[in-house]
Amino acid sequence: MHAKDAEARPTGGVGMRAAVFREVGAPLRVEELELAPLGRGMVRIRIVASGVCHSDVSLWDGTIPQAAPAVLGHEGAGVVVEAGPDVTDLTLGDHVVLTWVAPCRHCFFCLAGRAELCEHGMDHAFAGPYGKASGDEVFCALGTGTFAEETVVPAAAAIRIDPEFPLELAALVGCAVVTGVGAVVNTARVALGETVAIVGCGGVGLAAVQGARLAGAAMIVAVDRVATKFDVAIANGATHTVDASAGDPVEAVRALTGGRGVDHAIEVVGTSSTILQAYAMARRGGTVTVVGAGGFADMVSIPAMNLMVDAKRLQGSVYGGTDPARDIPRMIALAAAGALDLERLVTTRIALDDVNDAFRVMLTGEVARSLIVFPAPADGRGAT
Ligand SMILES: [Zn+2]
Ligand SMILES: [Zn+2]
Image (cartoon, rainbow, N blue to C red; front, side):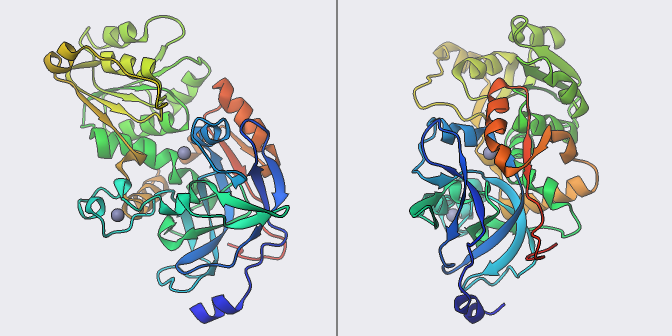
């Protein structure tokens, strides 16, 4: 499509429904949302599916500050239905996975091969309002806003994938899969035959379990407090499970490794207590990778002597060390080849109107991933 055509055609937000966050802790309300006309370098996407991630709950409950009203959701996939001026590498009908990190390709971190740390990677996440609902200006949370039938993102935040791959499952790649698998292969760099403990078996934790299996780990210990998750963890590739509600998980992991501890402890909860557990589960000289998003006031206290004498590597992993343009198509290829099993990450499929229930069950800890699936538009608009 030529930029001129895009400019000439008004952006149609009529009939577009979105789950709008208006107040911390109050249920999201599904409302009509009218999108502003597309700006330079922006694309409009018809969303096919969106995962519900724990970070959405963190935005909703105020743990992560978010301007309101806003459309939450950041793990989506869909079809390009309109391209704004200066969009050169996407065309109408392209199947895309959305990402909340849109690397600029010019900054220090991009040039250093650390696209996930791009100085401008989240500029779009903090941009101004992108539409109106009930007369109010609405923000697009994390620059993705996937709890909606449509969204508008910079072209760099829409990664084209193989059109043969089911878009519904591809949605999970945008956050849970790249974060979990990426933490294992890009950040921890788990090697063949190593031992891994994964603390927290939500969507990202299960993706990390699959990543460890993919990396050839000999032992994959899934640690959680909710016993119903263990069957799922085993189905995703865990070799052992530890019920953290039934005793000291550190002792249990050490017992599995001859008292030594694991080569890699991967923390996917984001609390000081689970980070300390992960630190203690790693063997001397082992690696501790923190993936969970914790609070600013939750301090992690480790004896200074241990930091030196245990010679462990303690590191954070942001977005799984992912370069979206490199890793999203790579994860899709691995899933298409059967090496990653995205269906195993999905606990339940729901409609947009059920998003509040998805928050509720996520807080009980019993659901790894709810996947919002949007019905295909009746007029065939942006049909796949
Ligand atoms: Zn997420
Ligand atoms: Zn950059």
